[in-house]
Image (cartoon, rainbow, N blue to C red; front, side, top):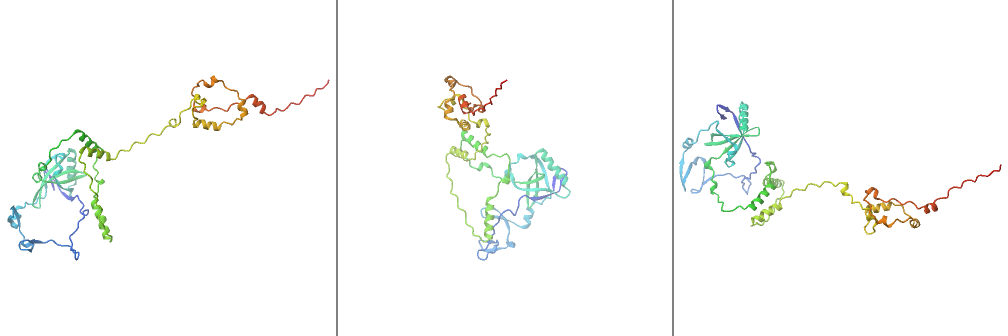
Length: 353
């Protein structure tokens, strides 16, 4: 149970990991395929030592031990407590994840649903986590209780003296240059994500191992995958950063807007360019000429000629619809010559009175 002031909350611990997910290979006898058993062997006497002949001791110097009897070990072990006593509430961001060792789901036991939800909601609103202590299996544990989804989770913490100081890690001397820092920030921005999505990642080694195991079970032979050749190391840091930027996937360009009908239509040909023989004929001009009725050479010769001034004088640009030339009217001579003869009137008989 959890002690929260004068309130006690009955709880249960649940594992956060799936034990069936891991792949475990057993040691077998090659000759008969039987599973092997572990035994303790004394290297001095070269005999197998049974559990009734074993004692526990602490090595205080190289090869020198102090021995403890079973009664002395029981006296050293602290009596297990049945409750986790909350000592203080701290901001969650103040606890570095390096102290996390194990995690357990914490659920309410029978009759503890209401105080359980009360504690979880209070810590969620205050953005604080609870530090608690309890004893079990001969050890005093330091744990952190924090809100998680709809309930609580318990993080088993390491003690401060159980961590090695980071000062033992050799870092060396190096200078961070501003251009390199700018390129590094660009690489970070290219693959940055505002959310942690663990479902996007999968243990590829475990997946391949299970596929190989299934092939072996079905009687198939498996071969080792070819080893990929090591990539060449880039010594120049600036060159490596630039190569990383160029190899990153570029964002796709937005599709262009569809062009309007006016932008797809070619420009109108001025009237003056049509009268000049130097400019080539446009597709619209060719289409208009194909629709024009064909005139005979004789009719074209009898067509009245236009003045040179009228042909040279520029005319204002007209819309495309009206820019097409209309078929010429037939000349008077052609119309009189080619027109059918009008029916003659019947002569009136003159009568003598």
